[in-house]
Length: 304
View 1 (tube, rainbow, N blue to C red):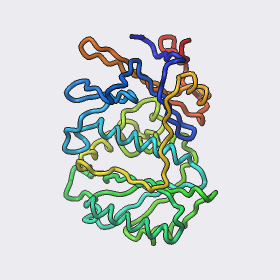
View 2 (view 1 turned 45 degrees about the vertical axis):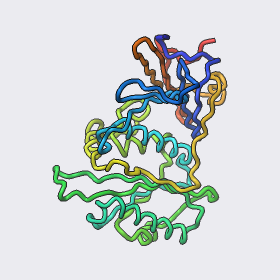
View 3 (view 1 turned 90 degrees about the vertical axis):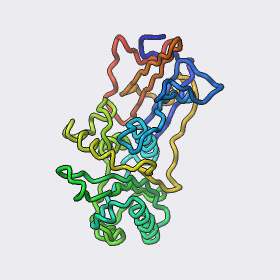
View 4 (view 1 turned 120 degrees about the horizontal axis):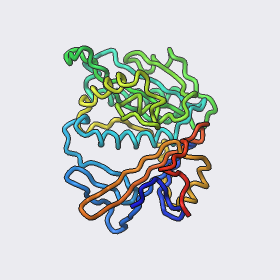
């Protein structure tokens, strides 16, 4: 097994394309007969992509961090494939004034479904969205006074150059609490930014730029994970939201398409009895001026 991060230029990888964000996934040894391979009692690897996942044995989200990370990864892919901080995009926070309503996950999603129909009726059926459910912080550990959930809404139009909805009009259409409308035009990786904002992901070069009050922020968010019931959908999307493009090709072909150096890499060694394998992830961002500096013990460029 190789001890560095090198990928042979002729090796086949999976390239995920999301506007200016790209990800390469490489697995040193592939098995094309079975889709998954069990690693141990808790984990398995998806052989097509090299992703390591955990069997879901949890009662809530905090008991299965890997399950949450997988969900957030899928969300990050969707966000980056559809949102890049353009003038035709908005980021909105929707809150509930009634805490008894906000605590009921079925009720809040029902309210959201009615709201998005009203919004599209008034401002156009071309509006596409990703809606993300987040629990409020529990103050001083007092669950009795917990306010419940709120929504983060990413909104865009594919046919308009600029999307603008007055704040007062938006709150009137929502009608259940206050709203905050923002633009994300100064963020070069919106998926990573919102992932860091919404959950306690481990700080790494991919997201560290977006974590404020390091440590404290992660702790507060992490304390809320148990408030997600098992089976709850953390996010919903409209039909017009596009999935990222994923293609198998050689490493050389992928690097030629991307055209920049990776800013983040991760190597995962797998050892089970006599079986050994290596999974390598590389992430790229065309909008970043600074790319990952090369290290002698982990070269980036593929070998011939």
